[in-house]
Length: 137
Image 1: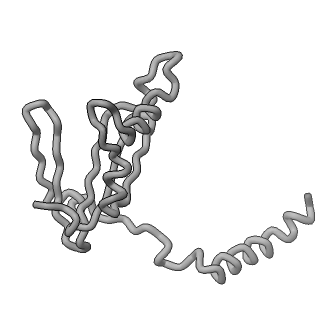
Image 2 (image 1 turned 90 degrees about the vertical axis):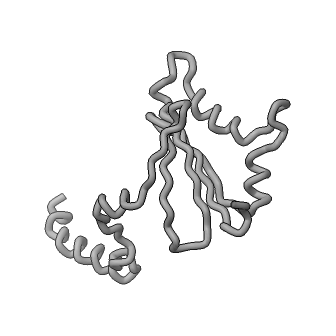
Image 3 (image 1 turned 180 degrees about the vertical axis):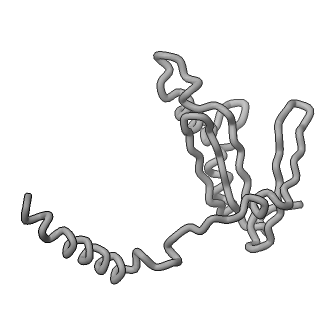
């Protein structure tokens, strides 16, 4: 144990140099804080008659359309014996049914879309991005 403390400084310097040489400590690898106003600037909020809140924002940095749907339901809403039901429902959205014979996964793939979903403690979210020219406006 005593040897470790004796060489601790050398070990830390060695780790720092190895990170530096591997590119881990490059400034481009760090996320920088973005002022909150720039994130919300230009966001338009619409509340539909059924209570659904729709937020839209145009960003013209790439020729894509990205959509996200967030539900305020997650594992915190599960009762004993229902563990994982929120996550299971997340997966079922991508499956076809007799009432809705189109599989969303196949539809998104046919458009060349990047899509996915996740379930957390508080919410379930679906998101997809597709080239703008694949959509009709």
